[in-house]
Length: 166
Image (tube, rainbow, N blue to C red; front, side, top):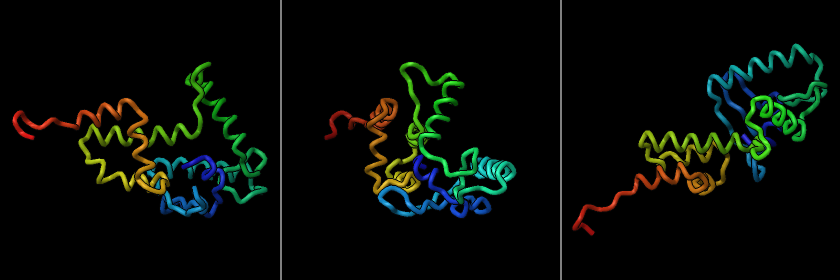
């Protein structure tokens, strides 16, 4: 999800029983649903349980809350991400991970896995595009051109015709 989509979630948007998140106002103000992997649903269930214990009377209906029980804002999330990535040692003087980079990494790793598994990307790109909330697969194909490893894998799929065949 995009950071703004996550921050904008309300409690009713996150159905942990069916493992589905409903984003009411995605990019271009379009609604979309995001199915959750069981591990993500489990982690969100743990978060929600802890959140409700720590804040029995929240000041907001948001799913993700600040320590004061209020809606998070993007700057708080960015600050926390900076602290986490610094503590992990992946933030350096020249490398500054952002929340959006997680989305990009998910898309790229999915495409790399598909390429290595000889999945026909054209047959699956629509699913990934929908999952990411892109308006069309063209927005998802951009990831193919943005990462050298993906370009190399894609180029490896191109084969020259046998000698004498045109």
